[in-house]
Length: 370
Image 1 (tube, rainbow, N blue to C red):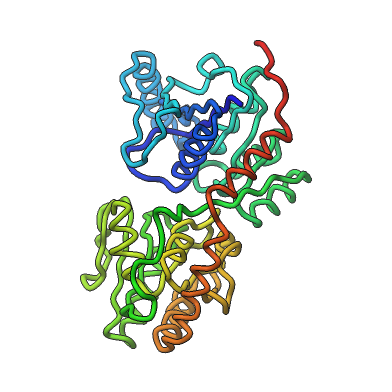
Image 2 (cartoon, rainbow, N blue to C red; image 1 turned 180 degrees about the vertical axis):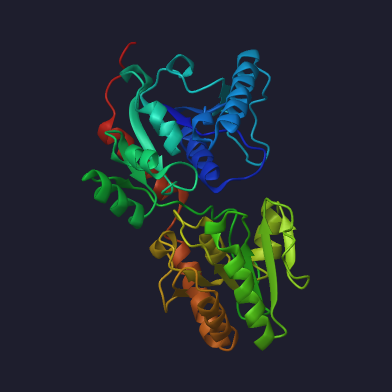
C-alpha cells in the first residue's frame, strides 16, 4: 500500500502528534508499505489574523515561505526522531494538489491540512483525517468543527474524540489509541525506593494548565517540604517557576526515561483538555502513579483509584490535595505505580499499527489515475 501522511510543518523540536505519525510511518515502512511523510512550507493562515496589517504581514510571510519551497531551500530531516530509511521525508511549497503524490491512502493530521485533503482528487488516495485533538486552540472553532463534520474518513486517538466526532457529524470514527514505545520507556528504578519527586510537562499553552500545576506543587511543598519537582518541555525555563523546581529543556530520550520519569514517584497532568496525554502514559510505563485533571484524553488509561487520582480541570487546590494524599501514603502510591506499569503494557505500537492498517484497508480502493 502507498501511504502519504501530511503533517502541518517540519519542526526542529519534538511534538507529541508528530512523534506518533513518524512512529506509524516507520512501522508501516518496515512492514513493506511505501510511506511518505509530507510537510508544507506554509499553510496560508494569513486570513486568521485579527486586523488588516497583521493579515498583510502574515500573507507576505506565507509568500516568502512558498518561495522558499519552490527554491527547495529546506532540508527534509527530522533531527529529534530516528526515521526508517525507507520512509520518505519531504517538504513541499504548499498543500496544493499538484505537490501531493498519487497514493492509495492520504492522511491529514491537523484541521488545516484536513481542509486541503478533503478537496484532493481521488488519485491522491482514500482520504483519512487523523484526529489527535479538538484543535480550537489553533483555529476558529467553526472551521475546526467543519473538518470534523466532513465526509473524510475519521481516525481518532481517544474515546472522547470519538464521541465528539459522532456528536458533530452523526457518523462514527475508527479509534486507534496512541501507543507508548516500550523499548524507550520502561522501569529502571525500583518503585518502592523512589523519593517524593513529582514530574510534569510544561507548555506555554494556557490549556496545558501549567500555572495550575505549579500552584498545586507549591501548595503541596508547604505540607511536604522534602517533596521535589521536575518539569520539562521544549520552551526555555519559564520566569514564574520557583527556584526549588528543577527544569529540563528538550530532554533526550535517556534523560526523559532515567532522570525524569524513573526518578519520579508521581506524574502530574494538570491540562484542561488533552487529545490523549502521551507523557502521562510514558510516565506510567516507567512506574509513576498519576495525578491528573479530567481532561478527556487520560480517561482511556488513567483509572481513578487504580493507578491514579482524577480531579476536575482548572482546580489547582484539588490537584494539590490529590498529590498530598499520595505523598502521605506510600503504600497506595506504590500500588498505583504497579498498576500503571501493567495498564501501560496494553498500549503497544504493534497493536495500534494493526488497528490503523485495518482502518485503511476497510476503506481503501484501487488507485485512480488523475
